[in-house]
Image 1 (spheres, rainbow, N blue to C red):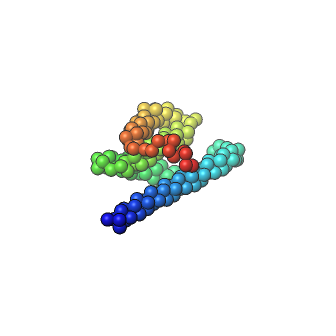
Image 2: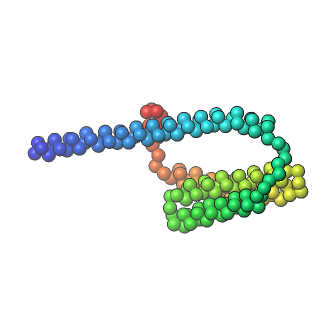
Image 3: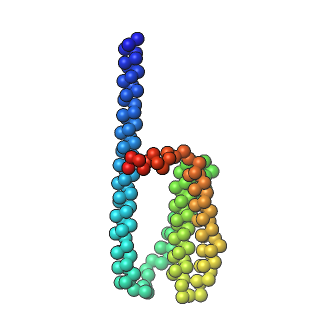
Length: 162
């Protein structure tokens, strides 16, 4: 009987240690990821200022058609992936929907900014305001709803150990 109690006690002692190791590894990865993103965001500021002061306002573009068709193919793949994953009720739909929304926002930005100063700016703005941005907003709203259904540890629990 005492051997069974000792074995049970050893199992109980090992389980929290393994969970603590996993939790510490997750915290370390989180911290490193956040540090990397912070360094990248800070480093991008001077780069953006440099581009703003040195890039020409006009530029002759090669492979214009390939660039835009390729971008739209990427957008179609993202939308189709979102639809397929949604129909299959796969949790990866969250990533696909966010990717689709970011691509829609980028598409709206580039369409409007590149049409600025031309007669096509009104069509680009209309598509952005009435199609691309509302769909992106809808997808982000739906993703936030899906994320809110997930079980997350309280914020206090993660900040106490960081």
